[in-house]
Length: 561
Image (cartoon, rainbow, N blue to C red; front, side):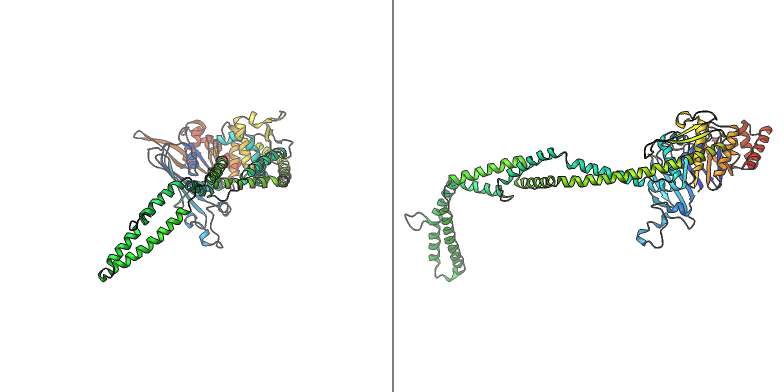
């Protein structure tokens, strides 16, 4: 339950705190005093993104101290207490866990620019973790929740919650069916269209295979061959010129490089002083003779071959034509070839694969229908039971002659759930969403929440008594008091008849000091409590008559509890 709430710099609240207890906690005050701000602060604490304004431009700070039972703690996914059997590295941050009594202090700080930071027991936390605590710790009901109750989806969810129906299996089956349908759509169409596609793929594959591509580098190799064949004449001329420099002309000796090098060696022969130079010149002469011989052999291997050149050019043209169609390179063409083969293999197994997928789909559809029927049967069984319980609670809320129905459609799933009510005897039941007045809708929601009391540890009601008064207000107060016997209930109300049932009563007030308006909360007891009830009854907290009526109302509430 929520033991303490502190709010700083939020709306017109400068800094206020209230300590709550188990049972029925009531917040009252003049219109505009800031009662709804307290509810808004709670919503912000659990990660709400609603708009707000700081009271003074400073950082907004909202803190709540909660005490949770073991069941609530176990429901927390990332904040549960570590088990002694768990490996230490899997236990998470120990600072996020409360003491042995499961105390959690949740804090949210919102700076200018609306940047938020969350802390759980002093350690940094995420908005998701804060929301998880909110899901098990508290439920807040206000005018928005009453409007939501008018939607059939909310009515269906209420019936499912009452019947303990889980839709997880259906959701998993539905997800699997969607995945299968997607796979079938991606697999292809009818058999004739696949035959046409097969013929086209075979044509493309045959066109590539007809070339018998040797390797990814074949075009580069042919390019080198083409350049060589196209430049034979130029290469011969260059080789002959080089040989003339190396060997000289054949008309006379001593003109080639080898002859000149030999002459230089003869000049130095026998001169020990030049022994090292002579050795190196001998090596040069040997290398020069070998190179000259190699150059002549290369020259002899050069032959003009126009036919070979034309053949290479034609082959390259064929390769380039295929590359333009199937890839920017031979590597791309070969990748395309592999892709075509895989597609043809898939088509070859079309009947078998499609039959397998369709079989899986039929099995899932059978499971889906069985699961839907089980949910529908459970809803039909629970619907009259829920209607009976709500009707009994409405009787306690001064709607003794009202009848209530939970109607379902005839489909196996019974997905269309709608609440019907006849507020008065002898009248035809009509849809709650279309015909219930504000006061009646408030009582239906309250009756529903009392019936579904397996939720959070703390219920917060923001003006759930809107549109009612008199004896009905006393009935609402009595029901809220009964609800508060086994959980904490916090109620914002304008009705003294409801406030009279409070175990603890808080007044939200505005003060204006030095032209600065701010809201604060104070608990009232004894005479101050009676004065607040008198104010709510007559607007005159000091009136003796109003005080007498307040005292009588408080005694009446004590008797009715």
